[in-house]
Image (cartoon, rainbow, N blue to C red; front, top):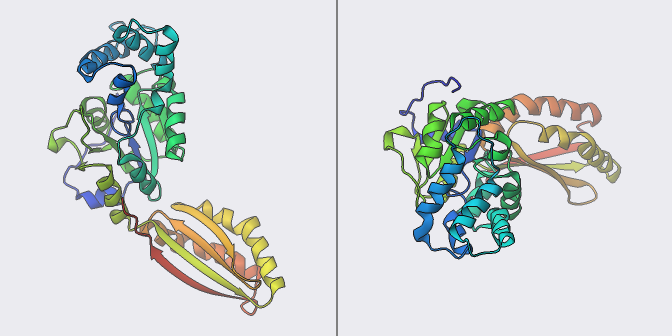
Length: 334
C-alpha cells in the first residue's frame, strides 16, 4: 500500500472543505441508487444479499493470478444467477445499462453546485461505458474518472486503491487537498483514509456507516455537502468588468483582443470556471468571470490580474477605455 500522511480528525469541517480542490465519489450506492438494479431485472430486494455476495466473490477471487473480469461481464454473470430464466441478451443489456440506473434525488442538483466550487470525480467499481452514461445524464464530464476497468482491480483491494491514488496524483491533484465521499466504509472510506485522503460519509440505503471518529466529515445528504462547500469556499463568485470604449472602432479592437487572447489566459488561471464576454452596445462590453470561491478570486487578483491588466495597458490607453468592476457571491439553493 502507498505511504500516506497521518490524518488529523480535529480540524473544523469548514476549514477542511475550504482547502479541498478535488471531491471524488463512490458512484453506485452513493450517487446512483443501485438497489433499483434488482427490480430492473425483475428481482426483489430480498435478493440483494445474494447480489452483493456473488459480486464480491467475483471481484475478489481467491487466486492472486485470477483473470480480471470487467464489470459488464461480472454483472451478466450475477444477473444470470439471479434470473436463469431470462434470455442471455436480456441479461447482457441489463449489465450494459447499469449507468442508466436512477440517481438518488439529491444527486443532480448537488453535483451541479459542487462542480462550480471544486473539481469532481469518481472512483468506481464499473466500466468506462457506465460512467459515460452517468455523466451524460448529469450533463457534465468528470474532471477525474477512475474505474475498475482501467485499474484492472476492484475496490476495496489494495491493488485498486493504490493504483487509483497514483492516477489521481499523476493528474496533478494533491492528496492533502482531496476528499472522497461514500456511503460505504469498507469499500471506500476506510481504505481512502488509510492513504491519507480526507473522507466524508453520506448515508444511503444499504450502506455501511463508519465509526464517527474515522471520517473527517459527515453529512445528512449530498445537498448538505454541496451547501457546506459553497459556504466554506464563499462561492461560486462572479466577477464582472464592464468596459466603455471611446468609439466603436476601439471596442472592436477590444473585443478581438478579449476573444483572441485575454479570455483564454483567464480560463487558464487556477479556480476559474467561466470567462466570457458580452457586447452590450456599440461602445460597451462586459466580461464575466466565475470563480470557485473567494480564495480563488483573491489569488487571481493578487497573482494573475496584474499581469493580464499590464497586457491590456500595452494595447489600450486610458483615454480609449474605462472599466467598472464588481463582484458577487452566487447563492444556489440545493
